[in-house]
Length: 429
Ligand SMILES: NC(=O)N[C@@H](CC(=O)O)C(=O)O
Ligand SMILES: [Zn+2]
Ligand SMILES: [Zn+2]
Image (cartoon, rainbow, N blue to C red; front, side):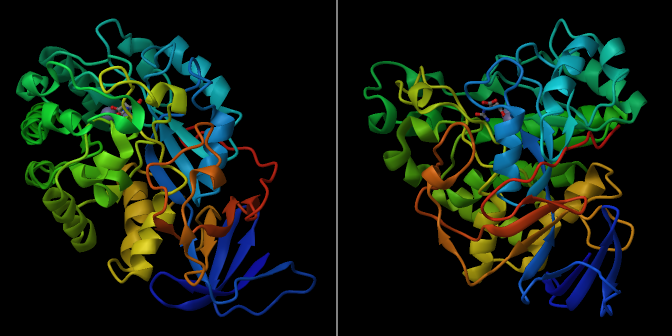
């Protein structure tokens, strides 16, 4: 196959030859006899995005998402590789838990990795016997699934991961620094009417950097590669960088702030929570200048019914895998980011940090994971158009550029209208 007239993120106009699922050549390519041709019409061709932080909920919470619906949602948003987190039922904290998840993941139409989690009753021997994508997210404070652990166990887990050469992804919040007074008394309201800002006041911004500092210190002591999940504050990003760790930021911490909570209500409850507009701007600055290594969504779907509860009863988390690249390209159209920066934070950097040599780049020898975008076709994001089981988005009304098509190892997995019958594979197998 020859994809002709594509524009790469660096502005180069190229053709791309794909053979047996692999990019064979990139450049000014003559057509070969009887070769299938795909006209890219000078649109932007990006590597398939790698989202190293999703919760596809299966096994155990199929009413929220399954590997089939989550992977389709990803493909329709230009994402061709995901890494799934361990807070399912059963949790992915021992070999058997990993194996059950691997069976579910076989239904995905995109490639994937499976993380191993840490709880007091985990079984590291059988877990490290499996092809883990990473250890994590290791919860330094409780979140959905109540998998928060003590400091000693974290050090022990980091030690094991260091020995095994497996990176450690950390949910870094220090619950000792949460402000309980913010959620005492009658908060009033349910769903969109709830006073959701109290969640941001409760899980304080200061609780992040302190936990990041502890995580990087343990990383230094144990030799483990530390990656900080969903950094939500500039202080957290800076602490990760100063300590030699990598970090990710979510689309919601880059495009939403506490100012949006009046409208979002409990739909905007997540961990770590939305921060002030000033902190959001400081996060976006770090995204634009390269201090944030990658964007990952923390795609954490819950049903509307679950989110329509009071602030203390609604679960934490928002979906995001389908809208990550679209939102970032919306920022490119607005002149706030370069296309190269988007390519790096959604593809090249996660491939480097998580050691995926065949992913994240459009170059000879790489998997032909590709997505094509028409920057003139930005449109309003609407939950009803998305493919996650949860059918809503916190980015309703924002502007996004969705892919014209998405390809996994040379096969169309999404043609802008329908999904292809494509089988995803475990990137660590
Ligand atoms: N981010 C969230 O608010 N929720 C996540 C868990 C997590 O990533 O902490 C979930 O699984 O729902
Ligand atoms: Zn988390
Ligand atoms: Zn998460």
